[in-house]
Amino acid sequence: MSTMTPDTESHFERLMRRREAIAEARAEARAEARAEARAEARAETRVGAEMVIAVLEARGFVPDAAQRERITSCTDFSLLTTWVTRAATATDMAEVFDDR
Image (tube, rainbow, N blue to C red; front, side, top):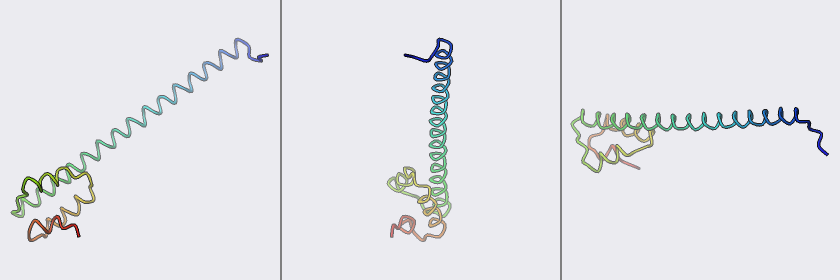
């Protein structure tokens, strides 16, 4: 025995559809925000890598192909910051990448 009338059932269905639409919109917004955050992080690390190379070259150091690849493929902004700081005072390339 159902206590729902056709009117209340119709109202209930509309509410459920609205709830589903809101949930879908929230999920899309979260996915969009995650994609934007990933793009910003990639841009940040790209700039960090460019800075490491720029400081090295300004100081007369020329990274070889393997070092350049290591720098440009790095996705850890904190490590790039360490390298650019070391590049500012290093006496040779080995000091920049010293992982001790």
